[in-house]
Length: 192
Image (cartoon, rainbow, N blue to C red):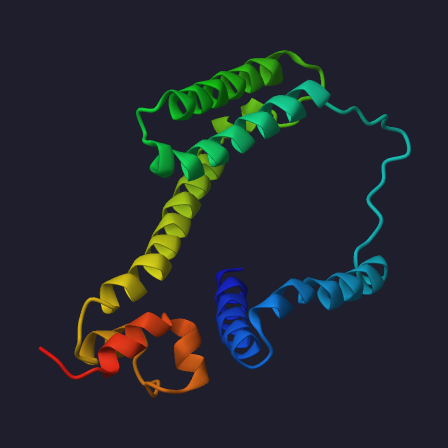
């Protein structure tokens, strides 16, 4: 699974760089259309039917509403708080309502007959450990992918940029998709 993710991320970065450079950034929105059509055509042939005829399915609308509302408000609050200030009433209110909805979701999930997310799954040490490791790996990946080009752009020499993407020529389209253009333009300028 890790190899597939790494391969997909690498192909995505390279293809995205080429697409945005030669066709325009707007075309990234059309990439999902052929992938979705291919998945719709291939899935019925490859994925076996998993419907249980005897079991009646139940849905937890209150749980779905509370967790969706909580996450929506959390993301909105995190995106607006830097603009209005973390201590601003709107930011604190959004974060507070998000926390209340998340707590409500957890309470609802312990009491409904068919929970959206059964909390008993977290009793498994294997699952809890795998989730913790996945969270740390994902956080480190996104932190690196956003901070490396910014760190690289602070230097005027090409050495730090070569450390970010070793072996790639500075002016190739693929290297520009792996690090920010800002990094390469600053690294190309002579200076102290």
